[in-house]
Length: 357
Ligand SMILES: [Ca+2]
Ligand SMILES: [Ca+2]
Ligand SMILES: [Ca+2]
Image 1 (tube, helix red, strand yellow):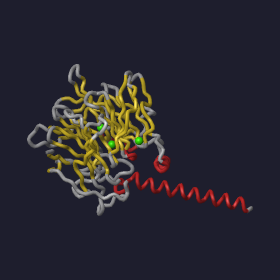
Image 2 (tube, helix red, strand yellow):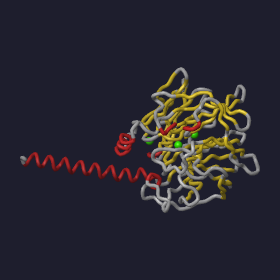
Image 3 (cartoon, helix red, strand yellow):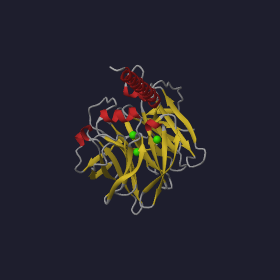
Image 4 (cartoon, helix red, strand yellow):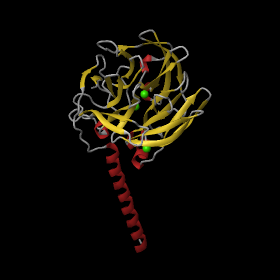
């Protein structure tokens, strides 16, 4: 080889090695791979009947909580072969206990694999619709719309599939048949997805769905996970989980989303719940996602609950409200407040009911 070619090849190899080294460092930062947590507990007890995860929880204004349980998801451990189930729990009851919701209609319950959820209350007749992300056979994603009837029954109304709804993590219902959905992958295959994460490409999207129109409503997100709405319905919040921030969008006429800002949270935050009264955001987060993907019961993934107060002000207040090293609860994904109570759910472990001071 000519000397010049050798020099060029050596320079290329050095630059490539430096680039790979830089990306490996970035991956360590992204996953918070060396982070250990200091425990900060609340007074909590385990919820009965929830042993295999309650990935998402949402609470109506009257204290009725819905829980999606038993998620099976490629990169996460799962300790039960049973299909997923939906539960309901009444926080006004002196001893709130989750009760399995009976599902009526055409849905195949043997492959039900519920993930993110959202409720929509039709103010014209107070009917309650529950929207559930479903990954039957762990392949792709679809959205199930149910109507909540009586005390313990969901009637399945509709299954929605669309090419833009390919890797849905969470949804936000904004009408009886319309919603926003987050895709946590851009590419469908795990290998290409890992490559985009490794390269730090912000390719993920938020999709708006209504019977008349389906489109990308927001993009430029590294990995969009939880989504929710402000109490006044004016703003939408999206967790960019591997970028450790919550993105705020203003909802404009015709369901157009305009990016406002991002708030850093210092953790890998999953689902978002909004306190009906205060408007505070409550986030279920993963303090170290390397412990989650390399699951080891001897060194379990921890849990971290973060609250954001005054998110629309110049100086939002981001605070740690609960932290565990995985000995009480592993892999928290959601924290849902109701008055002085807080429900904490996990991707594959138990769920807690805690007292807030
Ligand atoms: Ca949700
Ligand atoms: Ca971001
Ligand atoms: Ca989620």
